[in-house]
Length: 168
Ligand code: OFO
Image (cartoon, rainbow, N blue to C red; front, top):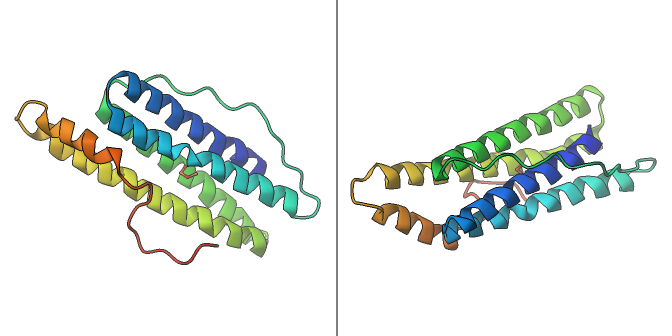
């Protein structure tokens, strides 16, 4: 399961990369910047790979990364799709933690908590951006609000503001 998750995290990075590139060529520089920032999914991939290799006997397997999805229709669609990717990934992390618990593999259970927390933050971050998008796109004032939202995201943090325990 951990080996599969290495490639899932790599896939997550591909999704962000492809959506970022799509946003960039559609002149949403701020949103592109935010999405490029989420390439940190590759760090998650690396964290799991190192964990597998460092736990005596483990050997990480690097396999093909699934193809990035089709381009979204528009920014709203893009954000909804990202949220779905994050929710799907949260479920996969939960399965790892569940199995670790069942097998009394407390090291992996503890290791998995960092990812559980990360997914809470990332879902919350994307939900917050969707809220802003909904506010911006329901105004009747031309595209001014969307422009401001895009500008805001240029400097948006990659971290959600949720209470968190110290890093594992
Ligand atoms: Fe790897 O953090 Fe979300 O998916």
